Length: 377
Ligand SMILES: Cc1cc2nc3c(=O)[nH]c(=O)nc-3n(C[C@H](O)[C@H](O)[C@H](O)COP(=O)(O)OP(=O)(O)OC[C@H]3O[C@@H](n4cnc5c(N)ncnc54)[C@H](O)[C@@H]3O)c2cc1C
Image (cartoon, rainbow, N blue to C red):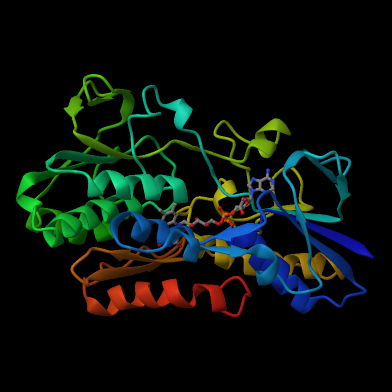
């Protein structure tokens, strides 16, 4: 009996596990998911916890209930991957051997990496962070809110500009928009990461009086002076700072000597096999695959990996390839949204901003639990 071990029960890991359980006969392979929390979190909902009245508990489901029965779930933290010996060690000392390993450990928030970040900045990149930001917004009586990112790469590249739009909408609804100055700082040469979509977002910012500065790469925060300072030498004051924290790849990947400088796992962008070890696949945020770190990318990559693992175990040619497909929605407030679809070869076509794509995002938020982890779509 072959053994497939999947590290991480997030978007990618859960879909791979369920697709393998569907495709492989029980006597062909034992499928094990290892997740350190045993809980599956829908991260796109964090925005709505911070800016709307989304209940945090609705975004968290028991991973066991999302997995097919025959998939084993081990709740524990992977602390060492021995790629030569083909085994994974967990924090409690348990060792899992594998024939194929799928690393789907997501990205790690590392706020300590930016001097001054802890205690000064708010964010919506964890459930706890989103709840704290909501409290800070509720008690905000006016002044300057700075929205920015600590560094690149980070998950869901459109999320910071989406947050700036959400802030505008939030304070408009509270009838105090005139008391709030929103200033967006981008490390890039434009405000929106996807160039073809940038003019659409820039127009929204201009129409809604969201100021922006480009080429602002944060170097430090001075919590006493309440300023954020850039490598370029600028100093921007704030009353409330909303900053996406620094990200790194998974700690176990770094500790096992498998990561690059950022801790990302070097991965072939088409086959999704890790470059150093073809029997180890990697999916989602933990890789260095040159696409947005997004649930959509994790989802599409999971399908390719499931097909390739089945082919490997059956000693058939593995022909599935990831084409870089990403599909995402951005909610600009005021019941308007934008959908973007692109891949390695095709940049997104500048989309119209409207109700249809706003509804699309709301619909996806609702049907996610039913369709996505099970690999039904
Ligand atoms: C605010 C926000 C908004 C977003 N909006 C969108 C959006 O609109 N559209 C979109 O497509 N994407 C969006 N994303 C990104 C999306 O949520 C992620 O890209 C996606 O979850 C990545 O899936 P993954 O499987 O790679 O990692 P994750 O879903 O993060 O799962 C990783 C899993 O690994 C587990 N784990 C980590 N370390 C260990 C360890 N050592 N041992 C065992 N288990 C471990 C974790 O517990 C977790 O369950 C957003 C993200 C954020 C933060």
